[in-house]
Image (tube, rainbow, N blue to C red; front, side, top):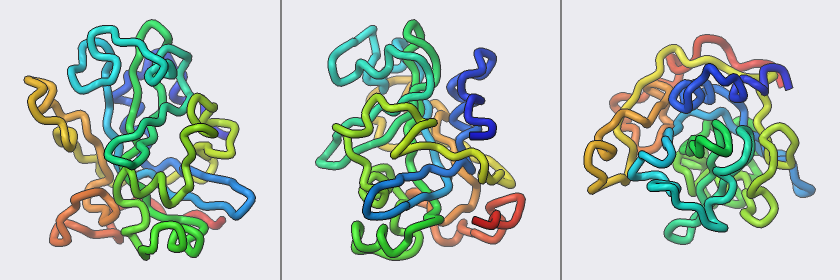
Amino acid sequence: MGEATFFKDPNLTTIDIAQDLLGCLLVSDLAEGRTAGWIVETEAYLGHNDRAAHVYGGKRTARTEAFYHEAGIFYIYNIHGQLCLNMITQSPSIPQGVLIRALEPAQGLDLMTERRQKTGLELANGPGKLCQALAVDKERDYGTSVEEGPLYIDLDQRRYPRRIASSARIGIPNKGDWTDKHLRFYVEGHPAVSKMPKRQSNLAQAWKEELPNN
């Protein structure tokens, strides 16, 4: 899949990868149809020292086992009745990952609408929403390769943000310095970014190039 091994480059940090994922195409190929969206928002989680990470302090459980594998597999967890999708980014000795927070819908919009009962950019403008729109399944997709499918990242059609913005992560209170660190990255001005104020949205200026032909 083109540049699909970029996240396996040992010179790239998890923060680098969180930014490089912006503009990649996340795809779900299932029997009922193909759905996909451009990644527009991510958050980095930096392992044992990161007080917001599930592996903080060296924690290792059945739930977090995916962190202790090679880069390039999916880690999925439940929170408040919703799924959140992450990609593992480093190595068994450096358990780090990136949460995929939002997508711009690209393919299978009718199927996404059926699943979400929403339309337009509201189909996948949040981590739980995108999992519902793409029918992510924890039992099926946890620990699978991001290069193989049925859930995968296709870099052959990737896009590039005009500008990447950063902020503190969302929903991370009471974690000391880790609450305020700028570990959330997003396509500046993209209206599908979660909690993006309408006055700051400008889809026409979000990407460097025109939408590729699919």
